[in-house]
Image (cartoon, rainbow, N blue to C red):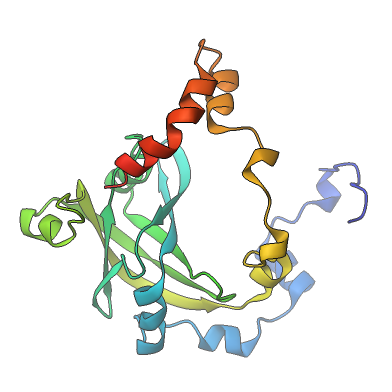
Length: 214
């Protein structure tokens, strides 16, 4: 990697128009336009059905949020070519995604599949339902999600492999040991500055996570 250059936000260096972007990048590759469709094509459906992970981007009055969701492969259920259903499992109860969707129904999804360098992007709008029968159909180990996010698809796009190839995301040789970074307990204690017992939190974390997955 090259050494970092000093940051410059001088007006003459800022790009602030679509015309300027087009001058920089030119026309998009025709294939990149042909890959985008307003429904879940059968080929794209296969990606959703095996994906164990999706990032959910939303917007609300307090700003933006991008949150991870993960479960057994295919946990995002395909209802039909224009509708997906995402169970909302146990978490930290911040409900940033849900709060945003209550105020602004727009949603963007990015699906990742281990070992696959291409990703799948879906944009649309979403509603939140607590229909008892639907919640029960998503139960794992007898535990249903608190709600289900129902996504109405607007566009679906197949993203090429360059980002994941450059990042070596699935390359075992590129993996970083968790001990190379501050532990979860350390983060809470140092950032919160509240006398939090970081060591105890870290000792108990594996059991706590296992007991609260669903």
